Image (cartoon, rainbow, N blue to C red):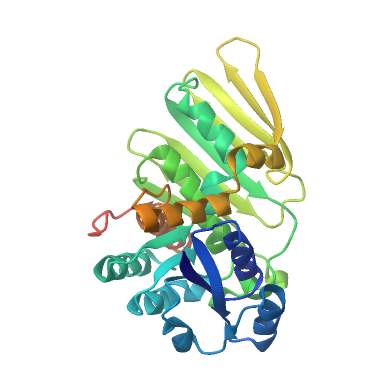
Amino acid sequence: MLGWAIIGLGGAGTGHARRLADIPELRLVGGYDPQPAARAAFERTFGLPAADDLDALLARGDIAGVTVATSSGQHAEVALAAIAAGKHVLVEKPLGMTATEVATVLTAAQAAGVVAVPFHNRRFDPDFAVVHDCLASGRLGRLRRIHSYVGGPSPNEGWRAVRAQAGGRLYDWGPHLLDQVLSLAGTLPGTVWGVTHVLPERGDADEYFRADLRFADGLDVTVEMSGFSYLRPQRWEILGDLGTLQVTGNLHGEFRLTVGVGAGEPEILDTSAAAENARRGDGGVLIYQQLAARLERGEPLTVTCMDAWRVAAVMDAIRASDQAGAAIALELSSGTA
């Protein structure tokens, strides 16, 4: 059993601490947060010490690895400090604010001989799982068009509403949604067009982003996330040359998969996040299970730091396109590609 600690004891960090209870190979032994209230809440809830000194936590010999659950802009910096101390790291998304930051973390982990894993838990989301299963069957034929859209009326809150603290929808939801579509495409796009919208009354961080991705094989992908959608959007629409797939409903509740192939009657699957998780497992727990298997037996990971690098490269291009008001040709010259 390996000792594990949580760095950043807010809502995300508390969620990670609870997931570790389901991982017998990893034992939660402590945490760190600069805020006294967060430390006190962690100690009350889990009965474990919460340090106010990060270096002291990383110096503990009984800690083999850490989960980095700080605010987004600190992820790479904290991960690098942990790696320098010889710790394995699981890093909340985004792993880094740029592709360069992600590459730096990946290179450092390889040099130190430790495992680094991005927490892209929505690769295992129930709606994405049923979409993936359908596409894997080949029933839709060659994919031509993918539209992924998540939206609701809730504003960014706390640091997520502050651009200087790496807030906004792109850095919050972008890693998840881009990771999903890039895993379906199997490669990086050649060009990226990005758009963001800020609602000044809510803060200076983006409340909406859209990315239009064009791939060398002609695949056309749009990814959208809105914090001011007052009607629920269709979650997925995927067009192949033989059929069409749509997902409607609540990705956290009940949803419907509709598949139409040729001129036949559409097939409908009504299911729910709870039902799919019961059958497949919770995505956050699955990542920890894979991490434990990697550390103990060298087993492969579904989501890797290279996936995080690809996501970050596209996010860099989205930002650059939004600022330029033009499509960006994605540069693929990085040594990590």
